[in-house]
Amino acid sequence: MASNINPNNIDGAYPVAGQDNNSQGFRDNFTNIKTNFQFTEDEINDLQNKAVLKAALVGQSLDNNMNDALIYAARIQDFAATSVPIATTTGTVTVNYASGHYQTVTTAGNITLAFQNFPSPGIYGLMKVQINITNVAHTVTLPAAVSLGIAGIQGISPGTAGVSNTVSFAVTGKYEFAFGSSDGGSTITIFDLNRALTNFTAADLTLDDLTASGFVSAAGNVTGGNILTAGLVSSTGNVTGGNIVTGGRVVATGDVMSGNLITTGVVSTTGNVQAVNVNGFVRPTAGGTTTAAIPLLFTSGSLVNLPTQTLTGGAMEYDGDAIYGAFAANQRGVLGIEHFITLTSDATVTNGATAQDIFPTNGTITLTGSTTYFLDAFYIVGPGTGTNLNAVTMSTLFAVTSALTDIRYMADTTVGLATAIIATSRRLVTAPTATVISNTAAGGDESFFTVTLRGVIRTNAATDLTPQMAFSGTPAASALRVLTSSYFRLTPVGNSSVLNVGRWS
Image 1 (cartoon, rainbow, N blue to C red):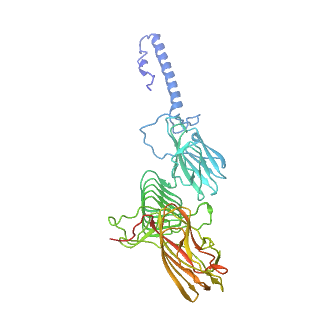
Image 2: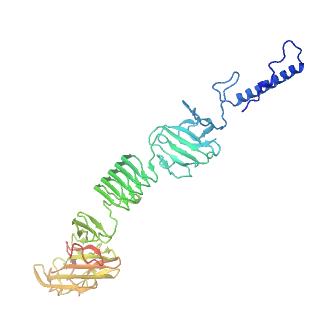
Image 3: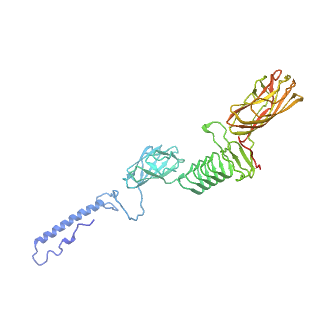
């Protein structure tokens, strides 16, 4: 401000020596001197009340309270912040911004932070809080106002803006956080000052090596020389590394590419998984059941379109109907996945003409719809030991719960004594209903039917299928058996319209 003191209104040449001087001149000088003294007092008092001082004036205490006044274009050096210890060590801990910009608290239990006296809206306030975690069981709960900067804070849960968030700590020690607000504390940003964040949002992460004991989560790409984590790798982009080693899951909507991919968890991706070596794919079971884990799980998709596309030797494919492998480039074949049932001991069956199951225990199989199966079977049917086979014929049939698209098989049958074949028969069967496949048994001690089936079954909808047999009369003099080592086998080879698999031309 401009000073009101006016030294020019005092006549320094008055009175004039050697002559009479008017007393009014004295009065004018005294009046102006008094007025200037009053101005001086007022201005000195104003300065004492408002000025920033290096030390307290005599008889006063130092108080450099700026009252939010603006200081600008200043060059500063060797500034410090007052360290304020907070007495409360458990429960609600109130952090008063007005108390100081650096505050400390040592936990004696779980604490919940509360903030007060941030600067008025329009003024940004920033403070630091040091939290000494004395036990890993102690947690720090943030108020809902702390809603910015929470993504990536280690140990935060649930990590959702606008709600109370709790931070847990893996080890004891001193952790420093900064808290800032420009709206009076309604919205507060948190900064983790002495730990790295666990994720980066909306950006690619490229590192020489990435090592984490917790989660690695990115909305972009995760690229590293080696990616080593005991937790989850989750990315909506690509995960690329020299070696990817995890004790948890790798989840990506992009590609997963690595030198070696080693995991005890799940690798799930809508892109490609490419690795020199892939070790330890495990599909965990849900709900803590004891069901065995699946070592390798394929998702069905379209097969490589030969010959316009190239199928690499050693590749495996799955189209939902069969699993295929290529032993050489463009050489696709069905992998030998078979369903079968066999007897390890003789099974006693009904000694009568009514249709009955070949395998009296667990003799029904559920087939997938729109699938082609190769059929192979071998039955041995005869009377009980020491009894005769009566003069009957044998029929084969299949009980189904849904109509088949097609069934065609060749039935080769022999019937005779235990030591000699009496008659042979070969019949083509084109329906699941009962069809006579044998000549009439000649009868005799311990004679048998032997039946060999080979053919194709094509399903329409999913169906239960039961191999059965029937006779033209009572088959045996007494008991009837299906003998040990009889079997029935089905091999899925493709969908119900498959014509060939392999390099046919």
